[in-house]
Structure formats: C-alpha cells, structure tokens
Image (cartoon, rainbow, N blue to C red; front, side, top):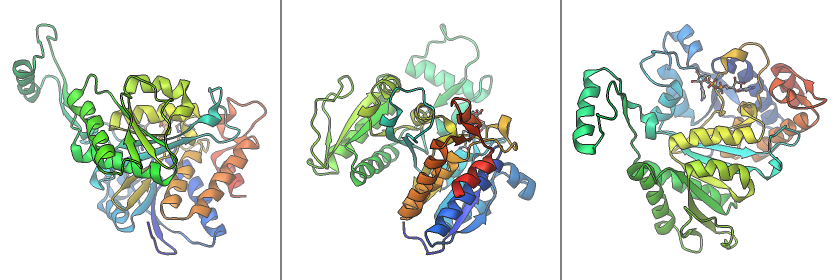
Length: 393
Ligand code: NAD
C-alpha cells in the first residue's frame, strides 16, 4: 500500500502487558524508520481499559475512524470486560473495519528455545478468516425463551434428540459464507504466488460440519480451479486423505490442497517442512496459530496482522496476559514483529529487515525476556525495556 512519506500511524498500546510491550515495540519500530530515513507520526488512540478511563467507553469512534482514515495501524492486546454486552473488543474491531484476513507467519528466530527437533524448518503462514464462523456470536443462552424456540426447531427439523440431550441447552450457529471463504482463499493464493511459496493448504473440519467447513473447502477449491490459469494454480487430487509429497509442483506454480483440522495439528508438528501457506475458517485459525507459535518459542514472539481492502491492523497473536501486566517483564518481540508485517505492507522492506535482524541478533546473543530465558541455559534475563533498548542499539 502506498502511504505518505511520513505517514500518520495510529497505535493502541493495549491492556495488561500491552502497557509494557506497546511503548517498547513502538521505540524499536521508530528507530528502524529513523535509521532508514523515514519518520512515523504516531497517533496514540485508545481502546479497552485506557479508553474506558479516558472516554468512558470501550471502543471510541475516534479510534475506529483513525484506523479507517489512515489505513495502517498497530495494536497491542485488549482485555474484554466480562458482561460488556459484546463478545470481544478485538472481534468488534476486526468486524467493524471488515479486516477479513488474519495473517500469522510462523518462522524460527535463531537462538530461540523450541520443543522441536528441527525448528528451523518451520516457515508457515496461516490465513485465518476473521469475520465469521463461531465468532459471529450467534448464540442462545440456556434457560431463555429464545433458546427453547430454537430447540423446538432443531428437534423437529434437524433430528436433535431431546430424550438423549434432556435438560438445559445452549445453542450456537456458525455462518460460513461463499464471499468470506473465497476472498480469504484468494488472499492466501495471491500471497503464495507473490512470495514464491508453492502450496496452500485449506484446513477444515468438513467431515463433520459439511455445510459450513466442508463448503469452505469446496469454495476454496473453486477459487483455485476457476480464477487462475492451470499452470499457475492447481487443485491437488484427493488431498484430504493422501499426503502429497509425490506431486511435483512446477516452478512458480501453487498447489492448493486440503487437510482435516485435527490431523493437521499433528502433521504440522511431525512434517513441518511440508507445509507452507494455510487458509482456514476463524476458529481453526485461532487454535492452529497458537499451536504453531508454541513450536517456535511461544506467544511472546508470535506476530500477526489483520488485513482488509487496502487496510492493515498489525496485532500480535497473544493476549493481555494479566498476570504479567505492568511488571516490565513481557516480551515485546511479538508486537514488534507484527510491526514488521505492517512495514512490509507499506513497502518499507529495508526497515522491516532491519527490525528482524536486530531482534534475532539480540535473542541469539542470549539477551532475552523471562519467557525465553527460563528455557535457555546461560541466557541473560532482560526486562521489557532493557530488551527493547538492546534491540534499538
Ligand atoms: P494470553 O496470550 O494473554 O496469555 C497466555 C500466556 O502466554 C501468558 O500467561 C504468558 O505466560 C504468555 N504470554 C503471552 N504473551 C506474552 C508475551 N508478550 N511475553 C511473555 N509471555 C507471554 O492469553 P489468555 O491468558 O488466554 O488471555 C488473557 C486476556 O487476553 C483475555 O482477556 C483474552 O480475551 C485477551 N486476548 C486478547 C487478544 C487480542 O487482543 N488480540 C488475543 C488473545 C487473548
């Protein structure tokens, strides 16, 4: 995305550890912009706890408008207060701005402790659908009149047997649309083509949820079949049950295959080098990207970003980790590397590379925050601020 030379970038530091990692990541990103001859005009905006203190509301219009206007923004984690009338502030933000693709790269940084034998083989990017699935929040609470009406419907028309499932019931619906599925898969394929990746794996649970997850995969395969030349993108035959290592993917082409989500969590760990770009409905993406993050050192270093039509909101995978909040302990790497995705998006490749190199050099020299230090021998434990200062240096 083209942005002005000295862009205004809205930033939400966030709740909990966001108060620690927000300023720390900001400092690193600013230093990289400075070192590559640019200037960021940060615009502090508020959501969550800090917005409640300042504006007495969780998600002020000013914040949403700023992200809408400036198109590129970065945020730390937000805590959703219990009983706030909506499920999650993060979900509200992604839905309001129609940020439909949540992209989470998982790659290994030298020096990070990992439970894997060959963590350096890990280099995957998950595309998680961001606006539908169970996150649409269509649910009825047990004991209400509404749930009883829905129950009547599912009992009469869908064979839900109340003699087996007697007593109170909570019911939820998950919508998966053709538009939502296709635009997500299209993004994943385009990304694979642009970044010389040769495979896109659709991850779903269509054997059980045929009309939602199964349909997601069918729509995804339609995109692969119908929207690209055959020598550029092709759908793998029978990929649900067979492994595809024997198929030769021509240079520059992308193969689209599908896997069941439960099996995928196993394959991802046993055959890490076989996977590349993955596209999936919302909930699968939530689970899978956390698990992938654990393989390369944990949530403290797992970055992400939400993308919509000409819009990017960078955001780490992790939440506000309340136990560690305000103690200057948390790892700012995940938020910092989310900023790298934002830099990539606006074409600041040199600044992005500089940040990645500086973070990696700091970690591989054994200077790390508590989350990595506890799994490393001879490492030096730094506070959030010390880590950030070392990366800047
Ligand atoms: P979490 O990601 O906040 O924390 C899980 C654990 O991971 C922490 O206890 C900590 O040990 C570790 N961790 C996470 N980030 C770390 C970091 N930067 N450095 C070091 N260690 C880190 O998940 P949770 O405890 O399930 O959720 C806490 C709150 O965050 C909840 O209110 C949840 O709704 C919210 N949340 C927000 C987002 C978001 O803003 N996008 C995402 C997930 C959870």
